[in-house]
Length: 466
Image (cartoon, rainbow, N blue to C red; front, side):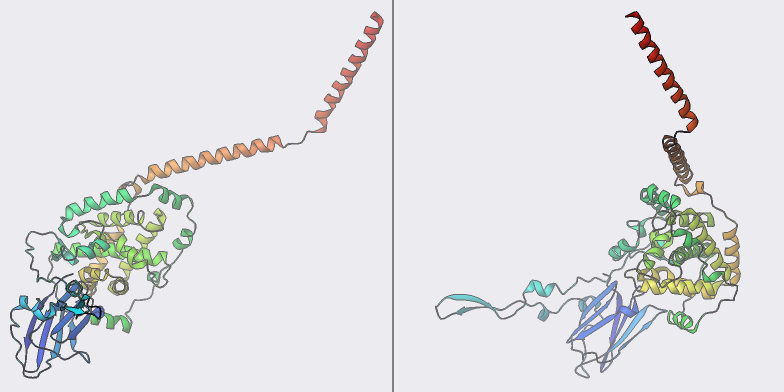
């Protein structure tokens, strides 16, 4: 768990607590106030403060969240109005439980009617039980100079130590936040090669089954109508707040290429669910198929993006079919052609599904929220150029690097050989079952007569000799 940065001040009758938690999910935030304790929880953040005075219990909403700054602000009422709380500037001291919370059971000897001595505890809790409720806290400041970056436009670095548990659930690469962008790519490819199942790929190739239906599905972004945001979507974007982005040309390129990668993952999920309401696997699918979201990958050109997208679509999901992946590339291009509003619709849906899939809401904080805000600020011209760039690059199976042509050739050879053997066996069975014709039976009859005559003649000859 992360101990967030915080600041605390006071007025005559109130305590003002400001907590900076940019990766928190505001909808899953808890604040508990009792006696002199304040407990804040919003995964991956945890903060427990021990004040010098007591507070009133919370009876109504006492806080707000600023999406732009990533800060929570809480106003808490003092139990004793006018009381001066001490040491609010010593933040480290506020994290340490006061002595009265270090409970130890009082032990006394009790004599029963039989004059036997027994031990009685005056407190039902022992020291270990109480300490279980306290989490070690440390306001962590990390030297991020020289550390690899990740997140939207590679704007973030550090935090790997505190988020290790959460990262392990959403990332393919161990210690991805510590790995350089160049090494992330090579490690990703190595993991993908080890995960690729030839049997699964060939099974989907030779017996596509319901995948034929998926490939005939027509998503809404192929409609000719202009795209507009619904009021609900506008309100959703408004809740995400506003931020300013100062990005150079390389950072903009990285952000746009990763956007394509994320949209491909979304389009795959949409086509394979045929546009139905997102299921429990949808967040996993989008997370897994996107190299950006699962490996903190950043790209240098559109060929690299397309290759990574198709590779992962043939390795991880339920349906692993080259033609299906080509369809999804077409979907991605269609989304780009529709412009910013269609892309925003897709990103809003991703944002919603990640918010409902802990700990994937962290991906919203690292990528999707920024994309939703930034995309509103850039020109349609950038998206048009991106769509054109996307359409100019074609992939072939050799570029994927999974020996697909050799696999398919071997599979078709085996299938052809099986078909030849099947036909040969079928012909043999037909020949064995063919009935004997009448023409063929006459010579047999003649032969029998001849044999009979010959036998009679031989018999006569024998008699004459006798």
